[in-house]
Image 1 (cartoon, rainbow, N blue to C red):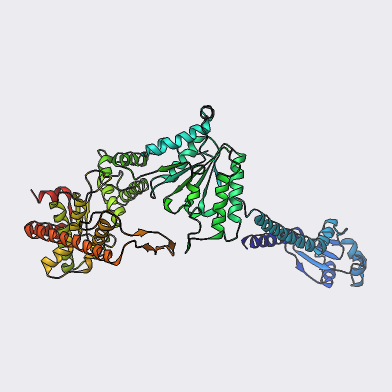
Image 2 (tube, rainbow, N blue to C red):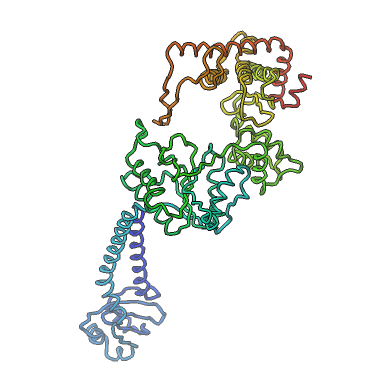
Length: 602
């Protein structure tokens, strides 16, 4: 529709330009007054005429005062006979400067063009543009099944493995692929075959797509990239056609690399049932399976794919011969986080003495994308504060913004709510401080962030892979501490602890059903979660235990929460003076940092 309107306006523009051209061509310059032929006769008799120009039936008159007039006569009669019939004497006619011109051939052709040729030309242009539009629609219909993959040219600033920190094992795996493409002879001489596919697995933000960009920068071979969602359309067969075209294009440019981002959009398990089956998607997946390892197995094309949902992929897609390698990308540890921060801080002016190591310690669980966003938020905050360089306080404030959301300064609590919030967060911080296996308290605040009226920020001393049962149980006590403090201090409880209770219940149930940490139940897991996506929700949980066992599970969960509650209540009552100090300091200055918090316990 946009192109039709565009062509219509082009035709209108051409018509207006041609009309303007004709108007300018026929314009005589100075505007002339139209008079009657009788007036011309009178002016000749009164000796007012300087010149008379006759061209066909048109008469242009120039008076002695340089004024211009125009009139007309009959084409069949001469100017002389006309003037004579109007009573002008032959003597006056001889004294008048009369110039006879033949009718301009240019004007004649212009009149013919304007009258006959121009309409046909306009109609022809309109038909031409309409035919061109129809032809374009036909071409679109023909190329509907063509791939939308884009080829990376690497003409500008390209990404290489040097630009990626951490994930050393993943880079080594992919470097072998790049090395194979650059010099395959040393591998084939050993009898090694090129891997068909490499599947990049990991949570969002760990660098799967960035790693693929680095492969494109390092390989020096054609690199095609496409998203899994670009295969599937509303018309059946289009996805499979695009797969054939994509692999055909890659084979023509072999050796080459294909990168399919978010392959779970098209590679989900076939026949999944409710909400999971889709004929067009399954046809597309079948075509991918055939192209990767069908009868034509001797192709020099490597397929890279990325997903954070390997559990939903079809088993046929994961077998050797299709995706021969699975590269797992984990969240970065403290050394990797420091290296990632250094990379993203290259073009940012940092204050002198700012330690990125300390920032890395404050950001456990952050992915590479989170760290990039963190420094970007810090830069924005430094600009808002009218600073020339990014300081430590800007980054620390950005850490809390990324983790908890922006501070809601307009969300003002009344005095009673503020006091309840202060004691609530003081309870969390006190119990966390007194228990030996919990993470250290870095900050306590009653400044609202996100949906929380206040928060207690605890960060681990070091990166951990495993957690113990005792640590989980102590964490339950910390989660329940705010609710217990409200009941002890004010004799009533509020809705502010609802999220803490939800987290505590979920953690206690996982201890019993997933981690095998129940005291009075056999060592096994309870329940199987089969995630079936329907309207974006997990709606299926298969119970592999009886109702009697379910009752025991509930008893174990209740026991864990009750014991954690008793432990937290004892700590709070035994350290009531410290609780009051923390709450008073929070009411006074709203925020307590780690050093100031630790001084309260010396």
